[in-house]
Length: 407
Image (cartoon, rainbow, N blue to C red):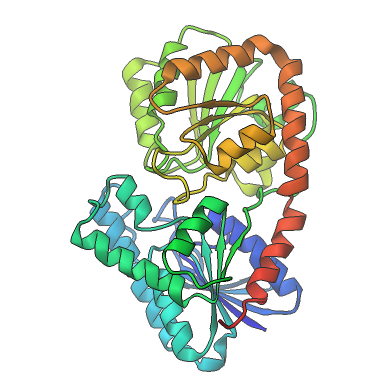
């Protein structure tokens, strides 16, 4: 079978979507499918970094196209970059022969690439599968980037709804997202729910203070509270930062932020303004070290913005659980994360706007001691092994894509 993947990012990019797609592409290729990826050359995090125009990795043929690289400093720059991505990828697939694919998999980045893909797939007689990592324009509307009810919002909603109507299969990350997709015109039976997997083979195991990442970064014996992943505009960090300020004189805690995104600036500015010595910022870590960096934390923080349930899906919670660490969730209920709080007792949940609640949770975690953290972490690890293991979820995702029906 010939499978064509449309996405902004792919291996070796460090964005989560790129890593999950690389796992999926390798699995499909290992089954004997002909897999081709059409993406862009620029790194998601640093547009100055460009990858080769053509490459084969793990049996997958990668074709990378030119796009602008204005970066994320402003909304208009991001819009120009997204537009150039869409135009370059649309031009490429329009001119591909009809026998180039049997199934096309479209992603949600750049926004609307699946609208292009679903239209071309119908024209060429290909089956179309949409992997919904998030929902647009609802995500941008709730984040205040687009005014609700405005002409741009209505136009984008219409284009997004067309994706769901045209898709032969849609993969949602949780039941909340699936509900939104079904209400927006997805065909009966088209939506499947499958969470993403931690991007590591096995978690790091060893004595806490012997963790290589903890040693390399000089984190010492302090309680490491970690936010690791994309610092997106839809995941506000204000409540966490106010709690950190309240704990500035508590020597037990060290707050480590790993990753990139527009809100890394928020953390840096807040840290420098208040002269916080209990905050460390680090870039995205290479995939081969992610099992060590995540395991260096004593407690992970997972954030979801109010009004974002079903529109976005913070998957960092899976990595935290997989390495056997407790987590603190800051966000609305119910959500896919709050449901994990119910299933795995001992983790913490706080709403936005309650920094005192975050402080209380962190102090309770510290007072409970290491043995309590190990017990909660062990429960999380067992649940993650049973429900989120890569060896189980990657084949299931491959089955969904390769088995996309013609509806």
